Length: 125
Image (cartoon, rainbow, N blue to C red; front, side):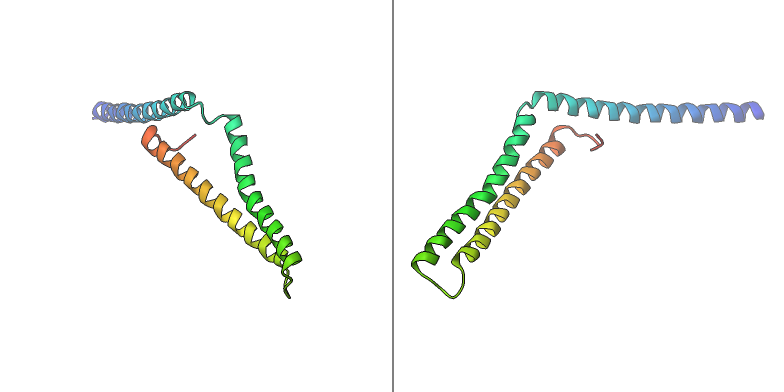
């Protein structure tokens, strides 16, 4: 009776080890595919990241500066009881931030879509 119980216990352990091995193999395979995909995709290097930071910065700075310059011109040529400079500076800043946010959200969506379609991984780095 104990021999049968020992054999059953041993068979259960062997089955658990096989399942664990299969899960481990799938995880390693998914990470290998992700790594190979990253090596093939050379567009997302260090310079790409620095360029994106610059692009986001300029997408905020340019509308802010344009709004400020227009506000200075309006304050000089068409005085009002409020400051055109301050109002258009804030408007340019808000417009620039919305533009940068929209652009970053679009890039994030593209990255997430690439990850979902490309590697089939578990998301674990």
